[in-house]
Amino acid sequence: MPPTTVLLAAAFAVMVGGLVQSGVGLGLGIIASPVVTLLDPALMPGSLLVAGAALPALILAREARHTDWPGVSWALAGRLAGTAAGIWVVTVVPVRALGIVVGAAVLGVIALSSIGAALPRNRWTLLAAGIVSGTTGTSTSIGGPPVALLYQAEHGPRVRATLSFFLCVGNSLAVAALAATGHLPARDLGVGLIFLICAAGGLLAAARFRRFLDAGRIRAAVLLTAAASAVILIAHSLLG
Image (tube, rainbow, N blue to C red; front, side):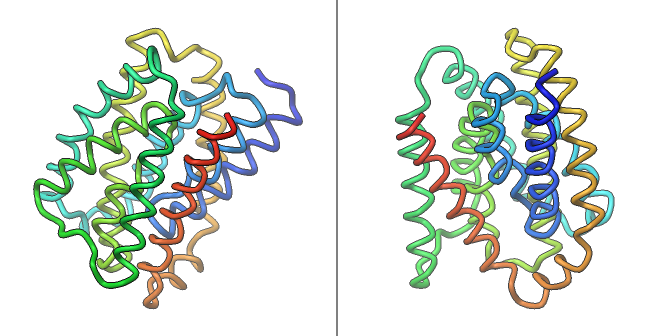
């Protein structure tokens, strides 16, 4: 186990990330990943992926009926392929170039969205978003933004439910892949379970935040969270 002060600081970041994800549909990896990486890089990406696989299931327990099942199926098909690529990245390739490219692409999509030229959501864009998500999610634990951007115009429950199902299955695949290839030590698993408890605490505190976002603010929240993830990926790639 990491030192108590490190664990407490990381756990607080995870709790805040859980609160944000419970309202927006993503946010746990975006907020907690840079903090955990700074405090104890050896815990990444396994510990956050463990929490990131279970927290969406708790969100789905409330909003599963709003899930876009056809769309998320295409995204998950891409995620499956992207997870294999992510394992390769973890074992062979430095993640700097990947982070810069993906971060820049996310910022580009956000810029297009801001001028009314958002990407269409169809099987091909969902498949591509799933591939990118699988690659970055497995290597950095940040995998939600590519798919989230395709659902930015939907209402809050639809965004949260669809992203939660995608992240639950996708992160579970990433955890299984890391374990199968020897990249998920018992320490990561134990800390990941602690992180899950903290993220669940954020979920319990998020009711008022969800109502605030569902009053016409969900699109702005998705774009802001995706932009934050892109900046974090680029900064981590340049400085790491």
